[in-house]
Structures are given as structure tokens and as C-alpha cells.
Length: 361
Image 1: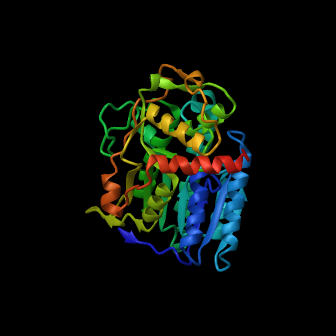
Image 2: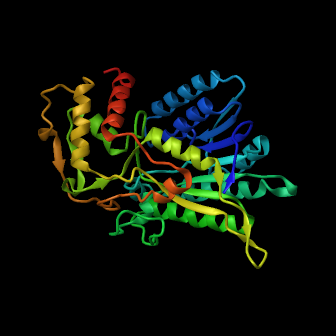
Image 3: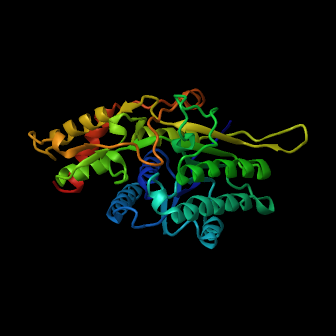
């Protein structure tokens, strides 16, 4: 692998005021000086835009503490090819991290257009811009990192999921678009020698996360006295990874780009890698809900005598869902020395404390 230094570099982060993107930007400002970060994102109605506004304000506050560094935010859509091309021409990014995507398995059934627009067309625009960053002998993008998903494993019965497993039977359009991203990146790496790394994210959680994620949705409903729905009658296991651990993993990947090599035919061997990034320790959903309830009571969000059984409904599996997600992260640990360390209770406690403050409960 080629080692990359981040100091004095320009990093383009798409989805920059999303959950993972915002936390990554804040950490990069804290750990690297000077650095220039360019972020692009949309404020859609997929979830409450106040969350993205809050994340952006947190980034701006952190950036102000580092006067030798710079932060530029662009409100826009990666599906806008002209805009992406203009950003590359203006800022000449050294490292590109594509986190912008339409997320969510169930929403892909209700609104498939959004997934094609962002996950396929948008990612194509990023790949094309990376390709042309090498035009006229320019040094070009040193490393492209992009978000894939554990959803690509579909309903594989073999666990834990390994990057060596087959991933050609997706059970949702969302999964199909993420698998497409991996194939597209591989082909561009082969054709244009672009060092790229795909990260198959498992369930990421923490403060200011996405409200459509189970832990956040459950909290919203319990606070309102509504019933939470637990699918597959609670017989689900999820590989929960705390946001700080995920950010640390991405940072380490950023610093090591796949090496450019050539085959016997003189053509590039694709400098392309794919890794699972998760916790390697799946939790039963009912146990997860139980810990969440305890932490919501501890944070005084819910009263001690809250009747959880009266607000809990067990339902069959939903279309597009899978019963278990479980990451084999041995390759990530071997190549980058990365292993998540945040216990589930500690992570949910931080979420509950943030939730109380954010919603002024």
C-alpha cells in the first residue's frame, strides 16, 4: 500500500453533513493541521433537516478553532455533473471520500428513483471527475474511498460475512446500487489506475445519527408514547458499530491507498480494495432494545416506571430485510490495525445524553 499524508492536502467529502461525514470532518480538523476540507451535501426531506443544520454548525465551530486549515461547504447534489466537475476544477482534491447516498432498505421500495439518482448517477459523476483529475499529466486523486454497505450480502446464510463471499443476489434496490458502486469503482480503477477503497458499512449508531435507524426511531416513538415495531419477532442480530470507531477506521484507510501495479501485459492491475467495517460482534435486537430502554431511563428521557411491554409490538420480517448482519473484519484489522472498542451500552449512553440535550427534554 502507498502511505498518504493528510497535512496540506485537500479532502473532498460528499455527504459531508451526513452522520458519518460530519463526524469524520470534525475529527480530521482535530487531528490534522493544516488541512483543507471541501464538503458537499443536500438537505432533503428524507429526515429532519435540523439535524444536518446542527452537524454543520458543529463542523463550523471546530473549523474555527484551526485557522491554518480551511472548510468549504457546498449545498448541492452529486448527481449534478456540472457541479461536480466545477468542484474538482476549483479545488483539485487529493483525496475523495464519497459518503453521499440515498440510504435505507425499506425506503428503496417506496422511492426507487432517489437511489438511482444519487447512488448510481451521482457516483458515476464522482468516478468521472476522479478519472479526469489525471488529465494533462496532473497528479490527480491519490485515493478514492467510497461507502458500500453490508446490504450487498443479501440473504447469505454463511456468517460472519466475508468480503470473499458471493454478493450477486441483492434483496433490495439499495443493496443493488451499492454492489453496482463496487463494480463501477473496480472498472475505473482498472481502466484509469485510480486507487480506490470500498467500505461495506454495517449498522453505525451514535449521537446525531440518522432518525430512520432503529435506535433513534425507537427513542422518538417511546418518547411520544407510541408503539415500537420489532421485526422478525425480535430474532434479528445486528453488527452495531459506534460512530467514533467508524471514523477512526476511515481515517486509517485514508492514509493507505492500494498500490498501483502493472500486469505482464503492461496494463494496470486494478488498485482497488473492499473491506467490511463493523464491530465483528452482533447483538440480538431484543437485547439492544433492553439496553436502550435502560439508558433512556438513566438519562431521564423516560420515567423509571415506563411500561415498555405496552409499547412494544413483535412483527414478521419485512421485505428487503435480513435476519443477521455480522462483519468479518479480520482484513481491516490485519491491514490497518483497526478494531472497534466502544461497548454497546457506552455508545447508547452517549446517544441518550445527546438526545436529551438536542431535544431539550
